[in-house]
Every structure is written in structure tokens, then in C-alpha cells.
Image 1 (cartoon, rainbow, N blue to C red):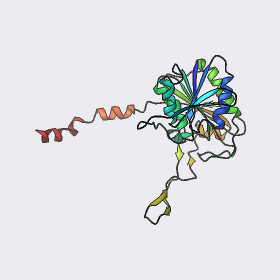
Image 2: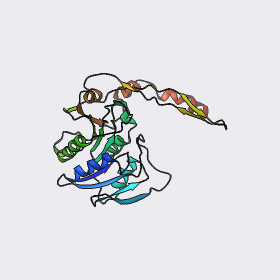
Image 3: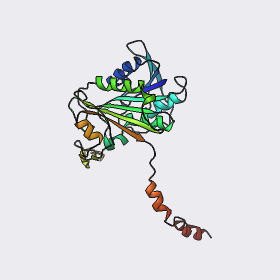
Image 4: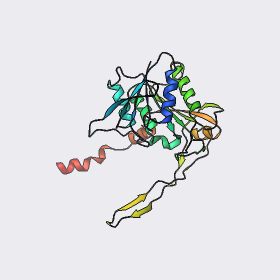
Length: 271
């Protein structure tokens, strides 16, 4: 099985390299590594379209190699799919992210976006994130991480991926707690409580102003069976995600609304 490993923290990030070494021990996989050349956290599904991508092959300390690019995590997946490392990957593994990706935060995450791009391309994806040793429950990064449990779990997941009940068009968002996991559980994504506010940071003599808008102390809704609840209980949270954003209820409701009527005035004016 051809596996692409990428991340959003950069190709030299400790989390990626611990997972890289763990995946090299998995039998019968061909591992390729394409990752950003520096941190691209919170880039979500952004892509690079207005300039060529710079790509450089680099050597890891164990003698294997990978590719670093000045693009985004999604760009990394596209580079692999379009032939940079030979045949297209059959599985996308993204991580291990330095910090959790829980609840609504997943929509901002470059780590999750890379795995999601696999779904877009028709191959399964796994996003892996690690809570810091400070046990924070938000996106603020601690100074220290222990990636050993996350790397081992992700490697075993890859080894068993063909037997894992994963519906088509679905990725697995894996979050690992600090301090050693008590177990692993399938759960839904929870909901954040953001405390963002507009705060003037400074103002220059030329009249330019700098604002902070993202709060440093988000919380979450304490609900059972969510990724937040799992991490709080010391469990590895495994959340299946898909790309279908369509509201079926919305289609049903709009079906009874006269949408054609919205264009009649314009058509009448043309006449």
C-alpha cells in the first residue's frame, strides 16, 4: 500500500518524524513524505494557485528522504496525487500535529485538511493530533509533547486499515490525550465556545492599526460522546468525518419555495 505522510507543522516537526519512523516499521507499505518546509498551521484547505510551488528533496537522519515544499498541506497531497513520488497514494496520513484538533477547530486545521483532500481524491485519510503535556483543551500549544502513543496507535491503524470499518468518503480524525491513553473510542466532533473579541494591539504614526481578534481562552460544550469528552477522560478520540456539506433538510425546505420567482423581476426588466 502506498502511503503519503504529510502535516502542517513542517517537515522537520518532531510529530511528523516520530510518526514517520513508526510507519517505516509497518510491513508492506511504500512510504512517501511530502510536507511544508515551515509551519503552516491553521491554513485549512488553502491552496497555492498564483505561483509555482518550490519543492526540495531532503534527507532524514536515518538515510531516507522526503520532499519539502513552500506550499500548503493540501498542496502536498496534490503533489503526490499528480505524480511527484510516482504512483498516487492509496492512503493519506497527516500529523502528528503539535496540539489537539477538536470540535469546531477541525475546520481551521491544515492537518485535517490534508486528510480531507484524500477523501476528495477518493482515497482514505487519517489525521493525527497530540495534546501537549499541559493537557490543554484548546489550540494553545504547550511546550512539551509525548508522541509515542499517537505514533504507535496511528501505525497500528494504518496496518489494519483494510479491516477498519471506514465508509467511502470518510476520514478518521484521531486525537491523543497527554499522559498515556486509557483506551480509544469512536465519537462525534464537539462544539467550541470561542471568546474572540476585537482588541487594538497598537497604532503606528502612519495611522495603521494592528488588531487582535482571536481570544486565547476558548472553551467547549461539555457533552457526552464527543471528542472533547474523550480527551478529557484520557481516551484517544477517533472521529469519522466526511465532506458532504449539503443540508438535506434545507433542500426539502427550499423545494417548497418559489425560487423561480426570484428571477422574474430581472427577466421582466430585460423584456
